[in-house]
Amino acid sequence: MASATATARADPGLTGDDDTPPRRAFRFGGSRLGGFILALNLLSLLILFGGALLLNELSRGLVQARQESLSVQAELLSNVLGELGITRGEPTPELDQVAAARWLRDNFIPQGQRVRLYDINGLPVADSYQVTEAIPGAPLPAARPAGTPPPERDIRAETLTAQRLERANRELSVEIENVLAGQSQQTVRRNEEGERVVSVSIPVRHVSQVLGVLTLEAGNVDEILGAQRRALVPFALVALGVNLLGSLLLHLFVARPVMRLSAAADQVRLQRSRAISLPDLEDRKDEIGDLARSLESMTETLSARMDAIERFAADVSHEIKNPLTSIRSALETLPLVKTDEQRDRLTNLLQQDVRRLDRLITDISNASRLDAELSRERPRAVELNTLLRDIVLVYETTAKPGDPSVMFEAGAEPQRVVGRDGPLGQVFRNLIDNARSFSPAGGTVRVFLSGADNEARIRIEDEGPGIPPDNLETVFERFYTSRPKGAAFGSNSGLGLSIVRQIVEAHGGRVWAENRMNAEGEVQGARFEVVLPSAGRRQ
Image (cartoon, rainbow, N blue to C red; front, top):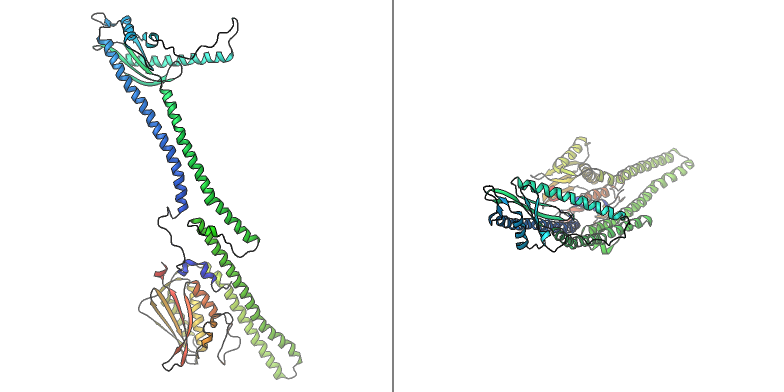
């Protein structure tokens, strides 16, 4: 519907207003909340990921360090066993199993490690667990009375133990076979108790002859890795806390404000209110504040448009009642007339009122569709020189004898604005029609186009009686008419200049009226000036 300001307020992109808050360049992707959410999520993930990486590196470093340490010890023991005479037989040397076992018993003190020696056939020769007081494994269960069958859980435990033992022996056999083939081994495998151990196996040599296999194991890897897993717990708890805190902050600063905005919008709808106001949200400097301010501005714009529609409906009702009242009075009087002259006068009055009513309905229909037309068409660059020249050419080609002529003058530089050529053409036609209606027969209406300060200026001047000083602003009100003597009754609805101002303000411009004065201070006619922001300024 028609509104003097609603369209301009609803389309700030075209008005060029400076009230729109500037976009902050430091916002992540144009969004402060987006950066805040991303930072919180990344922080929690980085904490957990960093802790996992740290522990993985420690695990790999622990295994590698143990393997290097065991390799050094195994090389030392192998050299001693191969070079210190713990061999027999010439020319083919053999490992003296008794001397080797005694030497290991006297010189190797196990500290969380286990050393085993195998002969050339892969048969065990010595085991450090057999020469130490340490007894591996868990304590034995209490003795059962004679003849009591073992519980089912004991059977399952014995089966599991047997399976572990079989697997450990199989993996160890494969490792010894590879070493006897001449390849040193560094592996991580399971022992008889199912624990993970770091194992290093190397051949025992005399010169180049392989005499046996020396295996060195470190069995506290699971304990260290378990401690590392326990060390991961604080990282996980911190990550969980950050996620919980982030979720709470998102709920407080995003979810709840959006819910409040939704509830306020529903309240406007249910209570038929005309405005929404959430002052504490409007003070925020993020997108929630922008949304709250936009919603408040939207409801204010809708309220202003509803007020404008109500005023427009009241004005329309008042203007239509006048010709309808005149028509009803003439129809009531028509049966009472007695002469043809009186009947002709009433008939002429009826025809004038019908023409006036038709003109009113046509202009009211155009005004009511104006907002929809302005919002439907997409703004684009419009060259005013071409538009005004074409409009003036139409007046020149359709002029009748005695009609005021229309002249067009433009500066050297073309003037372009961003807008809709249809409504802008209606602005200039309404102003030219208004100027022609006030100009004397044979007069001239002049149209000037110029540009300055990133603005396009259009002046339309006539040679009429001018405008009373008190009505320079009133002429833009709806249904205001002040026609010269002799003008056809009902030929003007008083909506032309109102439509002009509405379209111009919707394009971010302004329009005003003034009188042309000569040197003696006499009125020479009226001047209407339209100022529109140029296309360069809109960009």
